[in-house]
Image (tube, rainbow, N blue to C red; front, side, top):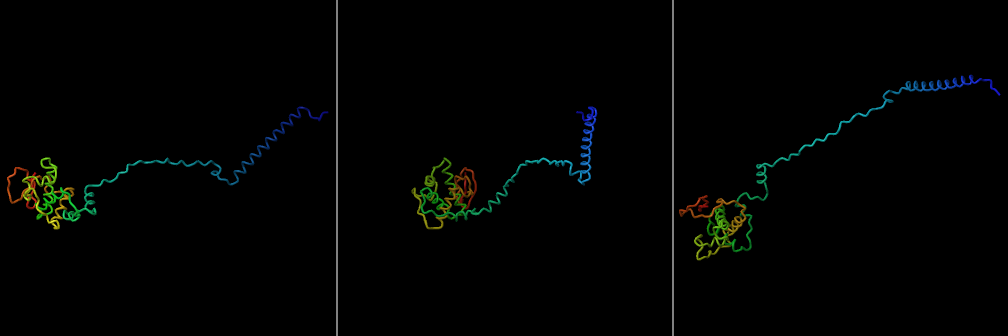
Length: 221
C-alpha cells in the first residue's frame, strides 16, 4: 500500500529535517554565546591566569672570619687574671710551709738561708737558681746536696756539715719558699743562666762571662 509519497519526495523531506536540526543547533550555540557576553563576566575571569614566575633562590657562601687575639689583648687578659702574682713577694706569700722537707730540698733551702738570707728575695732566688743550674749543667754534681757539699764551693760548709738552722724563723720559712719557686721556675731569676757567684767585696779575677750583680753577689756564666 502506497503512502502517496514518491522516493524522491522522501529524500527531500529527510534533507529538510536534517537542515532544520542543523539550524536549530546553530541557533542554540549562538544564543549561548550571546548570553555569556551579556552576563557581565569580565574577560580576566574567563581567561587562563598565568602564574607569576618566581626568581630562583640563590645561596651565597661566605667564609666566616674569626678575629685573631692580639698579643696586646692577651697581655691585658693576663694582667687581669685572678690569682696571678704581681710580684715575687706575693708569690712567696702564697707558698705553704711543708710539714717536712726531703734531704735535697733541705740542702737547697739551707744554701739560700746561709748564703743570702739578709738580701732581697730576688737575690735569694738568684743564689738558689745557681745551685739548680749546676745540677743541670753536667759540670757539677747532679743533686742539690752534691753541689752544696762539693769541696771548697760554699764557705758556710765546715767539716762537711751545714750549721744548725733556726727553723722557726721567718728567714727559714722565706728560704724554703724561695727554694720551691726556684725548683718550679715559677719566677724568672734576675741572673738567668748563672753558674757562679761571689761576694761583691772580693775580686777573685775569674775569666768568666759576667752577667749581673744582685745585691751583694756578682753572677757569672
